[in-house]
Picture 1 (cartoon, one colour):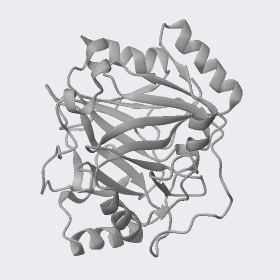
Picture 2 (tube, one colour):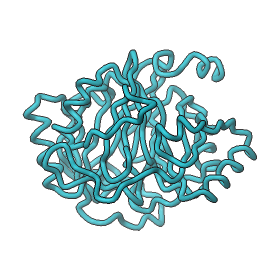
Picture 3 (cartoon, rainbow, N blue to C red):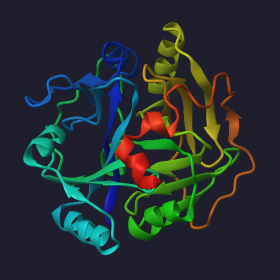
Length: 313
């Protein structure tokens, strides 16, 4: 499938007021304009797209959907046929849902774990429209997508890997280092980073572990780091550089209980013509100073809707 990467992410949250404060003042997000049909949802812009992150009102904080961006209309419909040919149940979004997402067309489907996904093309955008919520150099999205996400799965099965690589056509990146049983995957058109999504095995657990967002400079990382400390937010890992990535980052927890990895490139992504097998998690830094799994990781019964659990048996 000709998928660029993650175009947008949607969450349910019981802490919208906290996000309305934290998003612009700590991370530098711009609060977007909510569609007429969805006035209660908090939308954040990270670039010139209508939005990249959406926080819908909910009773608990959990992932609502992952929105994958197809390159265009032809690639989108080819992907639809591929899903159908492999027996994956898909449903088309109605005009109201497409307007909420700001896209031409979308389909919805679930992975074998039970997470909700969407595939779309042609999200609305306005050139030079992004205005950060605080002084900030900007986020790197565009041709690589909005960033990456790591989710926890109560079962890590061959069916899951087949779904991602055999059906969605993702590149298997590897298991990383020091992360237990985790699989890293990236979309076919993404040659800028190691992964778009990773599934970490956590028996009896599900939910978002962290999302990774790229910023334009070391200064953007450093200023965010200072604001996290100034606001007394829980850190997960200090500044550091992973062995597998020529990037600098740190991790801290958000109002929804999952972490954000704030990342900048120290040098362009290297060629990975072979599967890397790093001996250690990071070349420097990344001292673990908080929990690896935050309160966003819960039991499957809390994370998934009842019909999903029933379908999984």
